[in-house]
Length: 300
View (cartoon, one colour):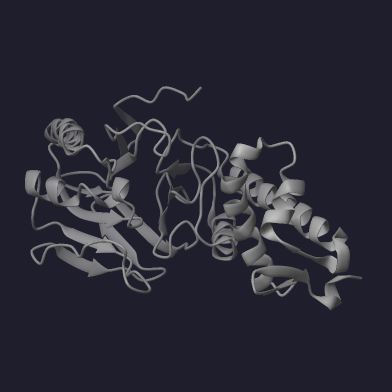
């Protein structure tokens, strides 16, 4: 069972979390959004709103969230000066225009450019958009955040490191590391490299895009790495033991996920293919016509 997260909670002297009104299987308790900074100019961290097929419910969620956000801003006598988008998924980007319209249309919106053709509609021309780069720093009164490009969950994903002050080294991890459960990813090779980046800069607290605050940040990131490495090794050893160290993904999934109900094997195969894709990029496995085989030099 998921832990209960308050709708609004002050997490430190300069960080307030506002929970998105969008609980669900993929969003857990809802998308976490953060106000970071002190004084009149405050930093609005992560965008919320769950993408739903039912437009009426989506509008209701948006209105509830906007109301909560505005109340916090009034209480703090603050305004949104900047917005950072961690990645393109609609539970992090979909409410941007509604938030800007309700708070500050001239706020500067920071977003890492999508590497290829973006799978989402372009933002309206009136949005004050600024492209993010790896290791950029964005500052407002009372807070500075350093950008770390962390692809894997999506190709445009970034995490944010707090620079200086009592929260120095804390990380806003977006969907790279979650407060509960494990994260999903599009490219495991990139994702593992991103986890290593987080491990190298983490000094303690992680503020995830979903789930509770993580106080043992480095330990949690290492758990993510160990979990994926163990699964990768299991897949590699299973492939190595196959005749001629060759197999298809559908054959491997029956062995690797033998304790998983067969009705779930299709989903499991998607996960297995992501691991195989990383093994191919690592040079340990080759793929020809959707058949995977261990590279000879790795059979020793």
